[in-house]
Image 1 (spheres, rainbow, N blue to C red):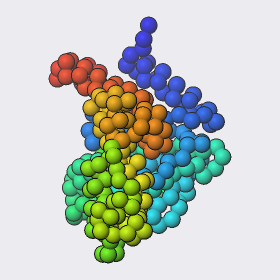
Image 2: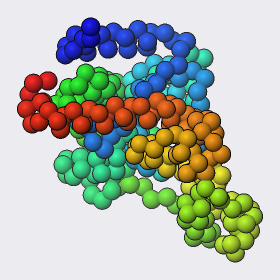
Image 3: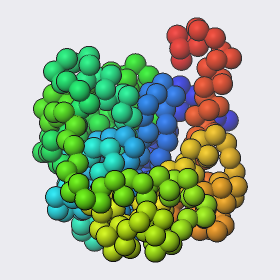
Length: 313
């Protein structure tokens, strides 16, 4: 016999707390709550897992709740522990790994550009596209609110989750943001880097070699490599792997089976996708797709239940 309502939430919370208490075990949940559009959520405990250099289309707001996370950013490496909040702007290349043997646990919010812009417009203190001006801040209260967003979403409390989310985003923007910083790159080669990215996006399944790509653009392999790294924070082959995983995510979001998504984006097979997807996203593609399916099922049930469903929850 299943549990529902408050009892069900308590059972899920107890299971989560039991799981989190096992400090030697890795676990992760990457998901979406249908009542918080424009947001991905990740709660995890990693010990051996390392994130290779990658970037996000949207923003990162992460509260470390245990251990130490080391984040490699363009300005250097930061070590984030409990009570700190990590802030990363869109398309900023970074890495992440454990900074202590027991690893790190964290609750992360991945708000879209649209969500951040919407909240920035509501608070009315920022002009243009907002961007964080700090990589990490000491903010125990803000960190706690981030974890509460996750708990409210997991309990199905849409009102609390949305209220807390907008409050913590407004807190970070009002305290640690300004106009989105523009990437400063040398003019020589910047256009070649952007053209190279366009070629790789268009030929993702069958990309050229570095030498072939440079020849097509009328430059040398070394000059292109240097320009691309300066423009995007990573070499072309690393960027391509990240781009393939991004496109695979969109395919999985649309219901494409992982094996088909793997071939469509240029991976040799599903195990190849599994390896890179798990390293970059933090969960295997099967678990990612299952959570997306669960969220889609919730939306369908809500539509079928009608406008009074929220009042009965």
